[in-house]
Length: 248
Image (cartoon, rainbow, N blue to C red; front, side):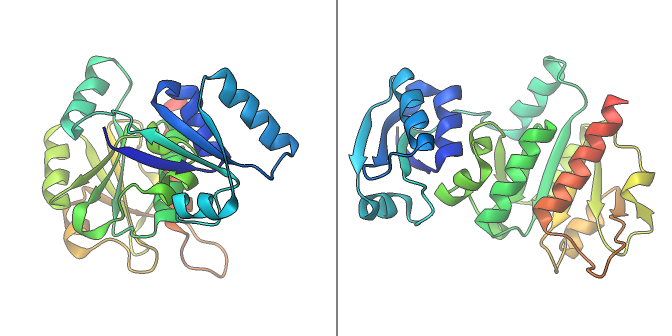
């Protein structure tokens, strides 16, 4: 199995907790001996991980970033659901509640995707979906920003997002898109049933074809001077409103 790179305390710690046997080795900054590093090393040893002292140059090369925090791990890929159909079948069969999906149209910034995965995990979303031609894939930066959520939330890159939306509708999943031009507010619609929330890139929004295939469009009320939110923030607002409605 091909190894992948995780870096940063949160991402590596979550992997140690969720799938310690997939951690091949962890490189740590030999010059860093503060309390946070000591606690991390102790946790890694308790999990049986192989620890290797490295310098900053090596850590930067492995991570492809200077934001590694002194921790870089080589890990095996975690096997999540192989397909969206498998995921939705499991949600239904295991009684995990109404489907809650996040569709991202045109999100190419790995920091935004990582943050979206993190909030999707927090809100209990069953999957995140994006088009192959207009999205960033899972890489080390995404995994670091996601703080472990890249290993827990299935992320599917589909060939045709409009066709996938049609397939979701066939499963009686309501597809709700966000648009600043929509008449209805997010808080005026029922999010308690099976839904897929669609968000586009900040500024450009969803593509016209994607918007056309949504069942409903909603806007997020904006009361200040700015006219839009970062996509990860908007995702959090939408997903947690769905979560709130499902808890009531």
